[in-house]
Image 1 (cartoon, each protein chain N blue to C red):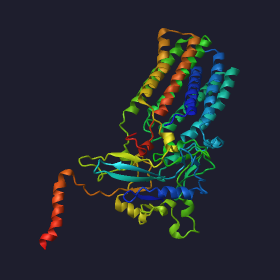
Image 2: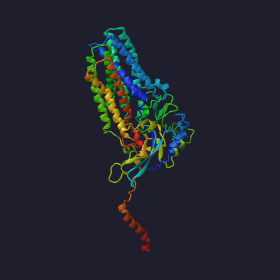
Image 3: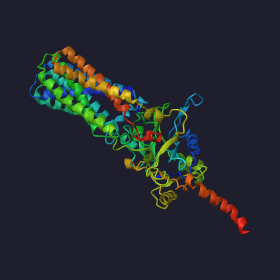
Image 4: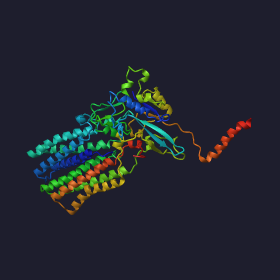
Length: 317
Length: 231
């Protein structure tokens, strides 16, 4: 699949904002309230900015944005429509939540709104992931690891941002460090599981299967006919080859995976184990993690192979 | 109703007449609008097509075979492109035809991602998704003589490798032809229930190997000599 920058940007930046807001709202609900009020208002404003900037970027990939408002109309069937509805609902709820926090309202109002905010953040992350996970023609995406990755990677970058926020406002860092470590380990595990599932091709489809070549035209002694593309029927690029024909060299893929792992997980691991609990360092670590997630998300698209590629000559998906 | 096509891989010669006839008819389609071309006279011409013909070689020489393979929308019974569409632009008609409402499409490409057959192509000029309409503006046009109320690709095919009809009717030509020749739908394992049926190429005659060349030669000489000897 061709990696579109606006989509990569949207999923990473909005993902970080959603993760931060989700954890911030949960921290608000937890009985151990260690964050000062300023941290909440700043955190809510920051996550809202990230979410809205990401959503705005996502509109850029539409070929006809003037019809984007219609995307709210198919909530019952389309994950993209669900994502749009939940995202807009979340933005509305965040304003209420921000007002409640700024106004210093009591727990009876604050707790349900905080919980609703957190649930909506997870819903948006899950809907984004399900857009990809529901596509059967792309077997790398059509797995349960896709929603797990989006949910946990969003919360992982959010947890690092929350730690930076806690350190900036001089809260006790220990609970936020342990929260980040717990989410980080889980996020790394599901991402590695995703990569493992996408390279082990147990459910791959072959060109022979795609064109329905059966017995009768196979060479003597072979049960499956060896098929290959003779001519694609067009002399230059088409929508299909542009959109689905993206090929990533294996050496680049390996280097990018290593870079993504180093920036998104290696750097925070080093910072935690060295005990660098400083606001400025935590900011840098969170930013490097997001850069690493850009590489991870770019690879998510670049390494996915659509079934239509078989008809253009690929031997298998 | 379950309208669709039967495509005979045994008789298709890969001439692209179906694809060009489709392009010609639908260039002025009131349903989908024109099929835009990009740089049609430039160095790298490209454009929107509803139907593309690809060519495959199957098996090892000398027992190999060329299969010409036209592909257009399969008008799936369980069309994922319609399910994923967030705007409601993609829809399925009562007669089974899958269409895109050009006024509603926002060009997000998700339906093209959901289609394993590459049946949908984004028109860069209009910013909307375009696809085979099964010539819905031909097949229902009562001003046309009945024999011409068929998709342009079917009418254009010079080898009669394409047939149009209702698969819900077991007595229709397409249903009987598909049943008689073992017609199959592409990538049935994905569960989209594609309606179009492909008729497999017939089993080719066995090709004589090099080891049999001597026997063949003797048989050939014998057949030439026989009439002389008999006389």
